[in-house]
Image (cartoon, rainbow, N blue to C red; front, top):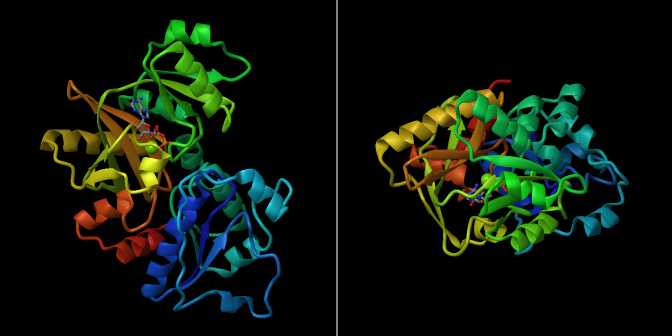
Length: 341
Ligand SMILES: Nc1ncnc2c1ncn2[C@@H]1O[C@H](COP(=O)(O)OP(=O)(O)O)[C@@H](O)[C@H]1O
Ligand SMILES: [Mg+2]
């Protein structure tokens, strides 16, 4: 097949995406596909004489993630696309492909906007459709749907900067709590607060990314994640950061121990699998996704969120889980690519 792997984008998670995308592109070439890796935000400014030649059979892509989240203002100034989120000639190349492999994280690649755009163009793509993506991207809406479906999720309040007051919030939610942008990912802007002062500082920090924040009860315990692929759940991974919580740095700089399959009793794995399937249906997801969980001291599982486009380097969580059941990385990429529309 002729494939465009779409990555990057105007999102704080663009670096992570470019890294996943390079490895996906290499794996798909290994499987015999012709592949073009395209940064959806940067696009291709000038069309070459033979655009077909940009689809590579034996190329090699590479991208390294830096320590800090990327500077989006600098990117915007450099690319000079105005308010457009889809760069020049992206649609042209996507139309040339048999299928678009979405390797984006966060922003319009994961919130359904790009999926809706591709639907309107009649372009086929991997992963969940636009509705599932937008429901999963909004943590407030996801959690409402989880509750409705009987998937336990920690208590929370929505906090709108400029409209809501911290004093009122404190009368409704107890400390310690977790503060996160409602549509964020990769732990960008996520922090914990034990005191009112820390809460105010955390709101200011998260507010750099978004005006709508989720203030959630902090759960103390162990952290897990579970993938779901073609209707079946994969073995859970336990996530143990060496220091602090699973923040941006701990996610991408190798400072976290990941145990796959997690060493937990069979009944907890079974319960996590049941909740993952329930959550997957509640959010109208399709093809594949990854769900984040916390397990408290009483043995209660709490679902934090669903990721519709989870990290896809060979050492990312979902590929590790697939490997644990004998699905090698290139086969996983191929499986996701060829799942029915
Ligand atoms: N309610 C909570 N209690 C304890 N830790 C939390 C809670 N919510 C989030 N965290 C920590 O923050 C990380 C990021 O939160 P998450 O809701 O998964 O957002 P993201 O979309 O950024 O991954 C989690 O992996 C976990 O380590
Ligand atoms: Mg998460």
